[in-house]
Length: 359
Ligand code: SF4
Image 1 (cartoon, rainbow, N blue to C red):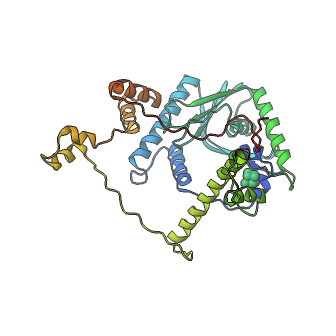
Image 2 (image 1 turned 135 degrees about the horizontal axis):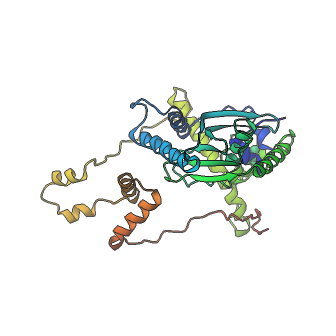
Image 3 (image 1 turned 180 degrees about the vertical axis):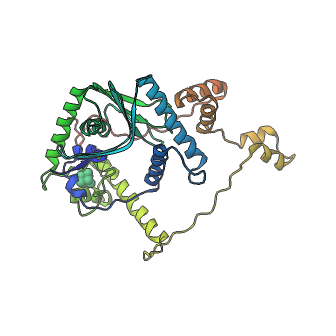
């Protein structure tokens, strides 16, 4: 029986051939992944050296712990709770493995927590296969008492929201999830399982663009071909372009890593960028400029950043991002002017064939 990591399950469901295509490819870290590991560790041990984490990282970790503790009080109240951190588990019977960042169990319920430290959208616990698998792993690990009927899984994304996204699973849900996992694993088990490129599947797939996956190479190659961008071909070309983006990024990241570790790439160097000047104290800056500029002229040359104002508001009031956003915009209402922005090109969530016909 093959063993699929919970974090790879979504990709394997979309492309069952990806399991064997990625087998043995060494893990390649990234600055984002390294930071994630650092912050997960800080949440686990709940202490850190001040010079290891930045001020922003410390407040992020503190907020993650605070969100978790509020949730614990909300769910468990005064009940006696057993807390476990970083639970690794391999469910060999169904062929899946994974790590729960935090697990709390009582006689009646269990809570599995997954921290995410990205700044992107809030992840939806309900439709997240990885999260559902953590609930399954917690049950199969035997760490949840047979008396427990409700298994909660929470995603805590402290850089995005003060509210965790929460999903409740019953024992029946877990049984259904196990069946889903087994069918994904069974489809992935044969060595010849088909590889099916798609932007969603290939985005983080280490086989993308390599000889492990000729199908993705064909798609990526399309981008460099001189194909007329006629409407009938656009869906295919856009899919190919989406596939090419992470592969290109991976090549650039690998080149940067080689050169910065002393290696050589003929014809390429790492050219240092000139440092950007940044005014650290806007008020003092105005005084230093002298008489020639009026306060209005100076204000016109400064830019108000919503993100920064919302961050300050949120830190001051301890509210959620949504509340900070709403309140800052409400207060600034009289001086806000909306400017139109060109629409973004976005893939339709409904399934579309590559020749442009809707199914
Ligand atoms: S690159 Fe895409 S098509 Fe190829 S194995 Fe990975 S997910 Fe599947």
